[in-house]
Amino acid sequence: MLFERRDDLVGAFQSGPEHRAAAIPREAVAEEIDDVDVARALRDAGMEVIYTGLRQTPEMIAEAALQEDVDVVGLSILSGAHNALVPQVIADLRANGQTNVLVFLGGIIPEDDIQKLLDQGVYKVYGPGTDTGEVCKDIREALKEKAQA
Image (cartoon, rainbow, N blue to C red; front, side):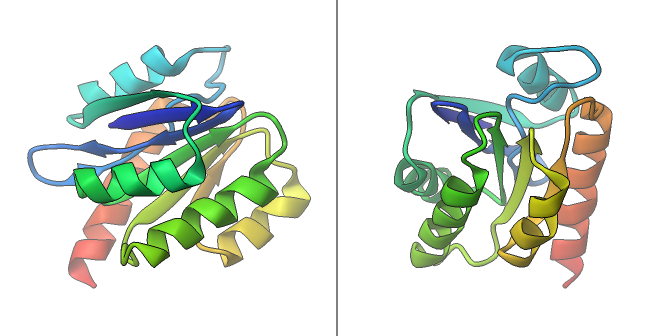
């Protein structure tokens, strides 16, 4: 999994032996946790984690996704900048030809914004308190659906 942060923006990518995927690196799960805890949960679920460092731009996330040949990009945004940053990440992924990369989003996302983000190409949105097991399950199911399509 590949992590990146710009303010509260975090991009993640991961790959496992059977598939490559990315997940949400920083998200409030039951109690406040940090990137390492989420990355560990994803790793324990069989996903490889690659960390890119702090303060990456949407362009850098898309480029890292391209270089790592990921299937899923995960973003966690706590700053409220999701309406500006997420569409830019998606546009950059598409500009790189990564039309089949799934984007997952976690963080503090107002209910009013969720459908708009889904319509813009986000596969799934998670709020505070989401169990990491649910995220892992959703990633596996999404990749299975993608493989069958």
